[in-house]
Amino acid sequence: MTRNPLRITVPAWVELYDEEVHGPKREEHINAPPPSVRPEQSKGSRPLKRRVSKDGYVDWVDEKHDHVSKLPVFLRKRADRPGRRWDHLRTAEPVIMGLGYRAPNEDPYERWREFIRSSSYGRNPDDEWEIVPYDVLQAQMPDLDKPVRNPFHPLDPKTKRMSRKETWIMRFWNFVLRHPIAPLIFRLTVLITSIAALALACNIFQRERDKAIPTNDYPESSQAIVAIVIDVVAIPYILYMTWDEYTGKPLGLRAPAQKVSLTLLDLVFIVLKSSSTALAFEALVYHSGDGMSTDPNGAVMEKVSLHLARGLAALTLVGLIAWILNFTINVFRLAEKLGGIDNVHEK
Image (cartoon, rainbow, N blue to C red; front, side, top):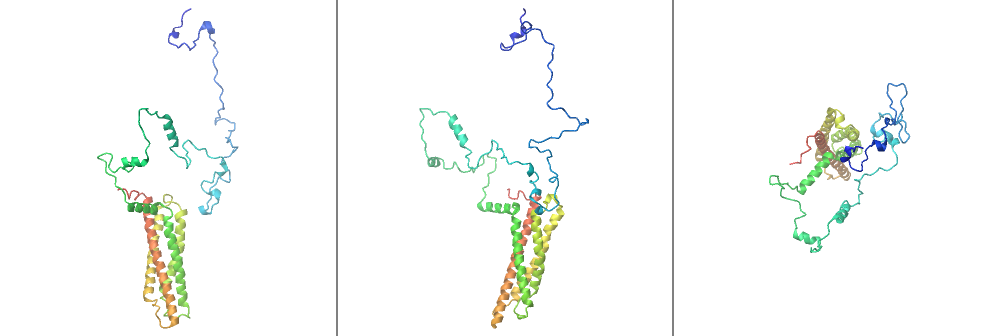
């Protein structure tokens, strides 16, 4: 019997084929396993099988959900809102948290402390050690927990520490440019002052038409008429601009000329509001009297007219300032969305 030469290189635990031990070789070939799923070709005449989910849904989208409503966003129902379209396919099972999930009240360093404590080497019996409080370490190295003032490399520039004033200015600037409630504050201020000014102007105009009040005891009526006309148009405009700010299309989905025209339309109302404010202060200074009349009834009427004129002048002035600030903020927010002032505070 000849020795198999492969046994010299093959390990002893590997069994090789030997004709005397295993018998003659068989001519049978091992057949390939049958496919688990029969292939379905599109050229066949058989109808294709539809996929069925594990939950039993044959149709992934129902007919009642396979449409997009043409109503505005604020008039749609809950099922028509973005993100609610696939609620009928969701289950009540909780989401599986990954390994990176950590509870809010969990200490992130607890597992590492236990790992370091269990894998650390033991102390040398000849070493002398003592546990000291944190105050001792603070006295030995008082500047250890302070930030590095000097650059890490001589060629690196020194970091400029921002003052508290600059920090508050940056926070206010970020709030004005990026917070969604910033334009709403000024819009509501203009709306409230316009409604109050409209009420006072109507009261002044009514007093002008009242025959029981002498003609020299009420302020000039031109500022009341101008305030009524401007505020009647301004109040619906403010409501529409507030609605468009939060429910309209963003800048990338609408024509830029439309957004710019709506923003510049504030200039028209600012000019009208400034004229109304000028007329209100003119009526307050020259046509409202001083309340020092010798007639008791006339003095009372003059005081009422003076209070109304002061209130109208104050409300129109506050509304004008709020409208100017709102226009300025809208211009800066528009420039920020276009990518023009992203790095305004970076030195």
